[in-house]
Image (cartoon, rainbow, N blue to C red; front, side, top):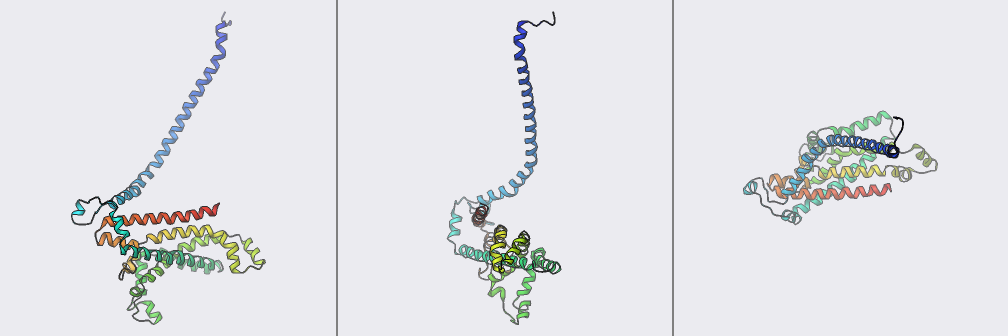
Length: 321
C-alpha cells in the first residue's frame, strides 16, 4: 500500500530532513558569499581610481625623487644623459654644506616667526577681538583679513614689493624714511611679516570657530566669580581651544615650511639672507642644475615634515587621553 512506509524509509526519514537543511544552508552561504564578493568588487571599483591617482601623483614622484637623490643627475652635461649611482653622497654633501645649514636655520626662524608666533598669535587675537565687536564691524574686519588670503600670490607680492621698495616705497613715504631699503637690509624680517599677513586669515577662521564652541555659561560663571580676562582665558577659553590651536599650528607650520612664495619677494637674497630651504632647493636644482642634490635635500625636508607632524599628533593624542 502506498501509505505504508518500509522500515528503511522510517529509518531514513530523520536523516533526510537535516540533509535538506544542510543543503539549504549551503545555498544560503553560497548566496551570502556571492553578495559579499559582489560588495568587495564594487568597493574595489570605487577605490581603484583613487589608488591610481595616489600612485601616479604621489607614490611615483616620491620614488622618482628617491632615485634622483641617489644619483648625480644634472640638468645638462653627461650626467643629464647618463646619471651615475652615487649612493648617499648627496645626503652627506648636503649635511656638510654650510649653505644647507644656513638655509635650515633661516627656515626654522621663518617658520617660528611667521607661523608659530605670527599667524597663530595674530589670528587668535583678531578672532578674539572680533567676538567683542558687533556683527557689522566684525564682518568688515573679517572681510579685510580674508582679502589677504584670497588675493593671488603674484598680486600680493607686488603689493608688498611696492610697500617695501627702497626708493619710492609706500612704507618709506608713511614713515618718512626715504631710501631705506627694507628688502635689502631686513630680508628675513620682511618675508616673516609678509607670510604672517598672507596666512593669518586661516588661523583667524579656525580660532573663530573654536571660540564659538566655548560655552557662554562657563564664561559667565567665571565672570561672576570675579575672574579677569587672563583668568577667563587660562581656565575656560584655552582648555576648549587647545586642540584647535594644535591643529592650526600643525597645518600652518607644515604649509610655511614648504612655501615658496617668499622667492617672489627676495629670491633668497641678498647674500642668502632669506634663502629658506624651498628657495635653496630651487636655486640648487634649477639654477645650478644639480637635480640629484636638490632631490636629496627635498627628501630631508620630507623627513623633517614627518617629525614635525609626529610631534603635533602625539600632543593631540595625549590631549585626548
